[in-house]
Length: 78
Image 1 (cartoon, rainbow, N blue to C red):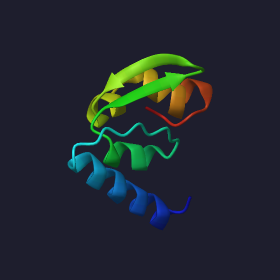
Image 2: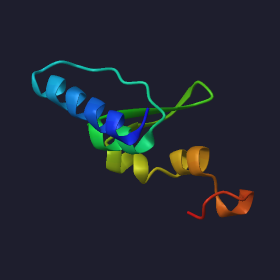
Image 3: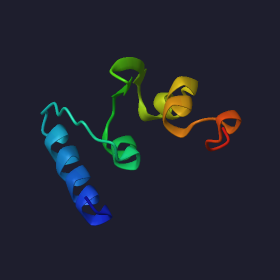
């Protein structure tokens, strides 16, 4: 999905949620998930490693390590 499609889908999901619907979104586009969802559950190899708001998730060391890596393992510095 390109950026325009992601933005359009994000807007649609936000509109539906605003109408009171609950939406289950399974997506790997982290930016879209962070701006679309009010509550996020993060899985790593099928195991739940974090749950919370987008801010909670972005600040969670387990999520950062699982998805971005650490400077020690050659990933993005945290």
